[in-house]
Length: 67
Image (cartoon, rainbow, N blue to C red; front, side):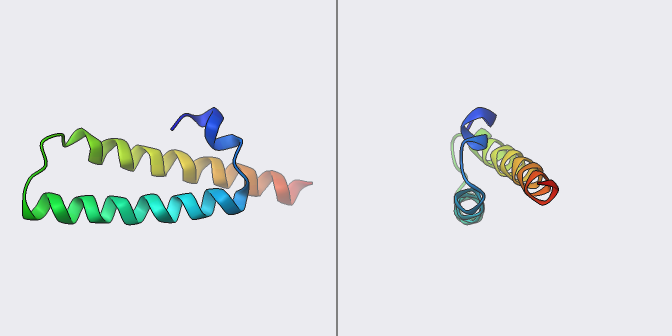
């Protein structure tokens, strides 16, 4: 997901999306532990997307408090 798309989301939607992505990552890691997946870069991409969303969420929350 691109930063521009993430910034267009509301804080509430962003929190929900982060929780969903974390659940997907946990499931992916569990599946990978049982039987290795072919494309392991999906795990890395998921982690980076979560980190990107959390960073932008923090920015939005700080901006909301400042206003």
